[in-house]
Length: 206
Image (cartoon, rainbow, N blue to C red; front, side):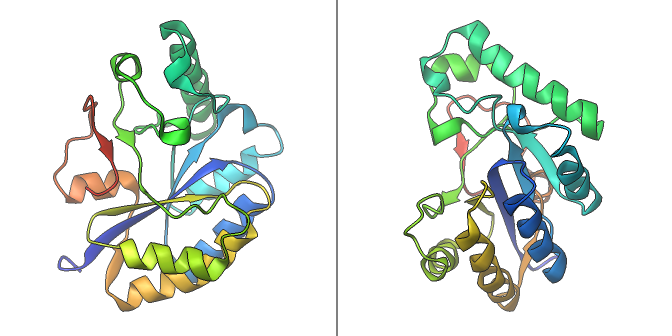
């Protein structure tokens, strides 16, 4: 187990009662966990059970802002509120403070690094928010990029069925390649990378 390569599946733009649950079904089928970067204003009475299921499955919940804006165009106080409101909502439901932040659109600036006291997570993206990118192509792109320490950037946005289907190829193939699926926190810990703000750094591989 200690010699296995590590990989972290991550999902942006949830929670929702459709695709998020379908992603969880696939993760449960293959007995792997992932990390979910939530948009705060999508956390509602209807989607709280989705988050609770994520936690029960050993998945992690992290911060993807309150409204998914271009935060690099916002004031200090606007940035602060996007983070605080989302973190407070996550803490209210899970009892745990999110440890990582993924900037919307992966757009950043110095002010964001100054205001947001969390490691900034990017990830190896595969354009899986683009409808015409097929499930087969999404799977191929993930597998082509996968290395020890990879953070895979995927989306569980409502209706994103091609990513759900791609996971049924991605996970078994990565298992064959002897990857161990970990949360982002576990990836940092196992790689001896401090979980703290690192201004100017966007993590895609740890």
